[in-house]
Image (tube, rainbow, N blue to C red; front, side, top):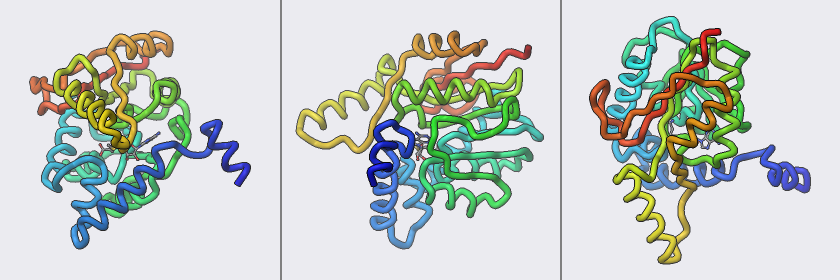
Amino acid sequence: MILHTVLSLFGLNEYQSHRAYDRYLSRMIRKNRGDRDLAYAMAIGSLSVELFRSQGDCHVAMLKHHGLKDGMALFDLGCGCGRTAQALQRSGWQGTYTGTDIIERFVAELRNKCPGYKAFVHRQPSIPVPEASIDLLFHWSVFTHLSLEEIYLYLADTFRALKPGGKVIFSFLELTDPEHQTLHFRRVASMERGKKLPELDTFIHRDWIKVWADKIGFTQLSFTDGTDDTDHPASWQALAVMSKPKS
Ligand SMILES: C[S@@+](CC[C@H](N)C(=O)[O-])C[C@H]1O[C@@H](n2cnc3c(N)ncnc32)[C@H](O)[C@@H]1O
């Protein structure tokens, strides 16, 4: 118990959000008895199974737009119960998928739905793969719930994990987007009314992503607004893409 407390204090044992996610999943399972798919969809933020599928299809469209091809190695950080993985499988993509998440039941669900994909629980701010082994590293709605320190550690280790020329593609919330601002002020109002907020929502600025990219060595940083549907369906959250230089 003492060891557990000490490790937790230093952030070495588990993430703050681990229990909150697990409790929320249990609540969704109770609320949607008899509809397991809906319970899992709701637990990662999709309000219906249809939305879960269309959002996953949107992730695949983004990945393809940013270079996903058959034969590539793709890493899905904070893979949840497989919104992206299930869509990749539906799309017929042939490649090596690896996902990690902090919640055991999400990982089990992903493995159940996508038996050919590798997924496991990992609760450290690192990418548990050999150096220079990944073509594309993707995560959707994960940095939206993490501290800035954790985000930096994940990005730094992403650089190590990517092959030269590899890319990281991730979503984020920004206060300069009017819709994201609405979410922020809704949460402010909840707190003002004395309500406990369910989990951390993190808003980051594009300039800060640039600071991290420069410090780590990423190049070709680009952004897509959450409302932009030029190259794939609009995704609501903003998207950042950057590359590990080829040499
Ligand atoms: C909103 S869900 C998105 C899941 C998935 N990326 C998707 O788009 O369906 C956020 C996910 O991040 C995971 N998560 C939360 N904190 C994390 C952390 N520190 N490291 C990795 N994953 C984390 C949660 O367990 C959850 O599965």
